[in-house]
Image: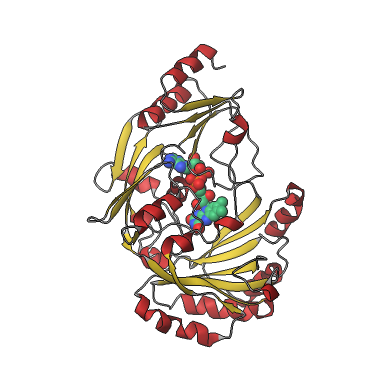
Length: 399
Ligand SMILES: Cc1cc2nc3c(=O)[nH]c(=O)nc-3n(C[C@H](O)[C@H](O)[C@H](O)COP(=O)(O)OP(=O)(O)OC[C@H]3O[C@@H](n4cnc5c(N)ncnc54)[C@H](O)[C@@H]3O)c2cc1C
């Protein structure tokens, strides 16, 4: 049992906010991105700074409480929120500092990728992240981090230079190639198991305007597209990324009305090389087959990063399956086509992200991220706003 006096003393020493079962914002503060997650922590501490994080770690340890750490709250299984324990919520530790000369970026432990994209774009720079800008820098980086720039610049962890973190005993340390190198190895793919990261330092790249967007094909062509794309992408220049998707066309602009709510397949491309070469790079893609829709063109990097955000606001029901793939043989393609044609709801989707190129060049034991020999990362997600669809999206994803 945690005593009220102990809680009061903890609260009085904080710059941030301590939320308990009686707080008016308790039910909002315990929610995470996945609406299927419904956990009831005993306390949620919104830390304002590193001192608050140290106090929270010490309090949780001394009181023998179960502790979870919340970055952006996107983890599908809801790992950032725990029943009856203490949530260390980093959402107030949100800042980004760009050093344009050194091409480095420091992001607070509770920052979102959209914050980073916004800050770096002003300097013509970008850090490799994911494909949705509301995802947390914390969880995505500690788990690896793959997205539109993976082939060009590597995973997020391949661009991580240092972390500041609070360890379970309350000590504050920096980990980098020079300082605490074993800890630095562990955080690059080992997840949130080693402490609370209060700041991430990344290497940034010259990426400002991409030549990017989706190219869509009829579902009937899915096997042919998958076969062609899987052979093409692994040989393509590494400044070109393209992930395959089964999807349902959203019923609104920029999609033409005749395609609205149609199940289709396609590739979401991102060319991050010199714009003057873009048309040339896309020649073989456009020569492969006439698509049903080609929305590829010049686009500011943060706009690409936020392109899917409106489709996937917080609070939807999500059921995820994910794995890494070395080969896409005929049998696998046939199974993907079969289940891809049965997307159970408009927001459900399957993506295959390339993880070769710069990500594939990093040595297998350089980080704990153990999939360097795979060619693709696959996610299968059943998604819908309606909790009554839980069963249908879950069983489709499992099938
Ligand atoms: C809509 C959506 C799109 C996604 N797209 C991509 C994608 O394109 N590429 C990709 O690689 N992944 C993607 N993911 C997966 C995502 O990277 C993971 O779910 C990740 O865990 C989310 O990080 P977060 O900080 O938002 O999550 P949280 O739920 O807050 O945290 C996830 C885990 O990391 C820990 N953690 C978070 N921050 C810290 C910190 N500062 N210090 C210590 N531990 C911390 C938490 O304790 C928890 O264990 C996506 C997820 C969603 C929901």
